[in-house]
Image (cartoon, rainbow, N blue to C red):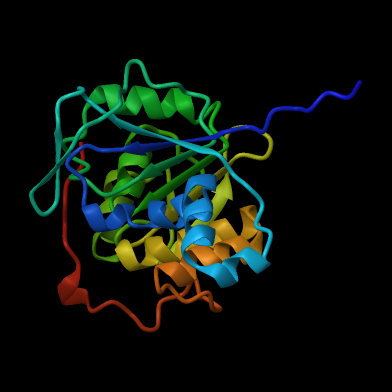
Length: 238
């Protein structure tokens, strides 16, 4: 008699705390690799049935201070599924968008410190990198944030090696764990595509991106040119 090992469901946590909605767009790339979306696509597009995509079951957890609808830009409200207190710490992926890093709640920082010891991959976009840094998780590591705020990040959080790159990858807090940080929303999309290509089946990621009209092409971690000094913003994060 043979036994079948149940497929592992990927558990993905998305932090919502007055964040920029565009910073979380990358979650749709990962979501389009899920069994649910793949099954829908193969039903709608006959040509898709010629490719056998690996099936990935996914569970999405939306985490905030309370279970009340939480604000995100431009004026949209999302109903969380978990709070920082009761959300599991041993997730597969955490995605963090960009809030005002000076006002994030202490409960979120405690959650990030604990989750960084158990969650394999943490992805941040824009000031989400400063949010993660404020928890201490990025101390001694390389990271980036919104390019306009790099000066503030360097002065407010000197224990992090802030880099002027579109995205940065460094080791996490246990063997195999990774910390991915990106600049503004467009950088975050490219970062998630890069992460997905290294993590999931490439044909599957190609299908996921094509359905969203995102190009799977060679992407650079480097910006095309220098940031104008006049565009830099000073934000004190305490």
